[in-house]
Image (cartoon, one colour):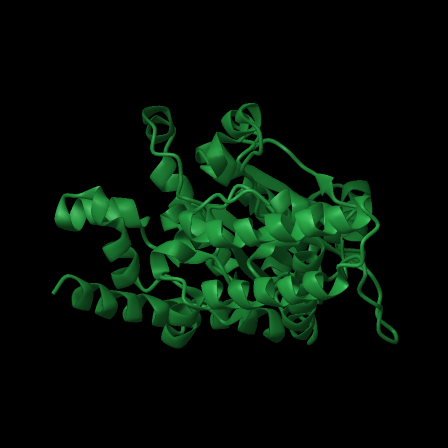
Length: 389
């Protein structure tokens, strides 16, 4: 493959030599199997050595690789029956946010004994491949209507008791004037607040860039996972360097100080797990990346789907109070006989009402999510104070 970053060039050079050797063996009908095997071993060793010593800044670069699978790629591979839902019903459609309904478990996963397929809601940032797509998707930077669409679909998931799966891949929410005029910060805040209040399981996966409030707006979850070569941070390294040191060229230094890698964030308790990627990154082997994603999602999602959260508790409400009955009775005595009989019939056949409330398991999901992010906030404040020292 063509190298996109400087540290990939030695690998690309060796890959080209290997391909040339294979072509020569095939075209000239010469047995070069020993040479090919030897070069394959060298290539494998070089890939291991290169990606084992990546700096935080190189990991950030890798998370932005244009050949990495995006949200739609994972959705198409794992959830072929995905049905997209569009629009915020207020302003318009924002293609930077992908949302819709799919079936769980994902394609390729085996159903366990007694397990049935269920509907889930999928939300995710979506970038673009071509220049036209990138413009249409706004490079994965959502506007207020994108987050309001996400909230509309979250409400749908809450009403219909659908678990939620989100894919995070954005440098941040769109900072343009028109987005601010339409209430960007309010939309992000409301989305975060809504996620805190949901009583259905939520799992979030960072598959590339996880930048600022634009990522957190769909990232408040019971379990947060990160792919091996992704990052998750309150701010992009370039912006951080500009604010702290007035020089965006110090982005590499900022990336190191921000502790934005999956390993650092697991240690700090910000995320719950790391999803392994194929050797050299997800962009080098999409099928293997899909397989690893499916296995990790199954291991993380399945335990959350147990425990009766989907069944609300029903509370019976007794008929109206006795004083109200007496008042109604007094009125019917003064009314004509026919009217009294009619009114009495209605009172006699009035059914007992009931109300539904989230089950204890559902409330626990919500409380766990709140406690988790409150602790994260406390750690983030402490880390921020250390960083600026």
